[in-house]
Image (cartoon, rainbow, N blue to C red; front, side, top):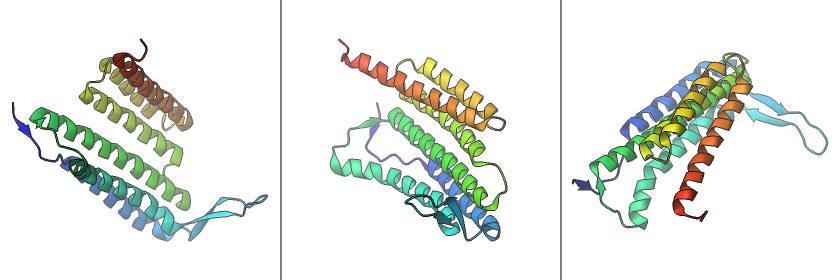
Length: 209
C-alpha cells in the first residue's frame, strides 16, 4: 500500500476561492458609484446612537473574511506538521482529505460571495435581496455537508446525506418565493444532521452504556 507524508493542498478549492474573490472585487467596483458613502443600519434610540456602515467596510468585509479563512486552511496542514508527528497516509486517504477541504472551500466561497452581493445590494437597493441569497447559500451548504459526510463515511451516512440533499433541493426551491421559510428549513435540516452524526458517535464510543 502506498503511503505518503506530503501535505494535502486542495488546488481546485483554492481556484474556486480565487474566482470568488475576483467576483467580489468586480461586483464591488461595478456597484461602487451607486453605493452611498454610508448607510444607517440602526436608528439612534435610548442610550445608543445611530449605527452607520461605510461602503468601504461593506465592500471589504466578505473578501477579507474569505481570504483569511482560505489562508488559515492553507496554513493548518503546516501547523499540524510542526506540532504533532505526521502519520503515513494512503493515496486514497489523501484523496479523501483533499476532497473534503475542496468542499469546505467551495462552501465558504459560495456563502461569502452570496453575502457580499447581498450586502452591496443593501447599499444600492438593486439586485436580489439578502434573504434570498442567504437561502441559496444555505442550499449549497447542505449539499456540501452531504458530500463531506459521504466522503468521511460517517455512521448512517446514506440516510443523512439523503436528508441533506433533499433538504438542499427544498431550500433552493423555496429561496425565491419564501426565503425566510427556506432559511428555517435549512437550519432545521442542518441541525438535525449534526445531531444525528453526534448521536451516532456517542453510541459508537459506548458513553451511553
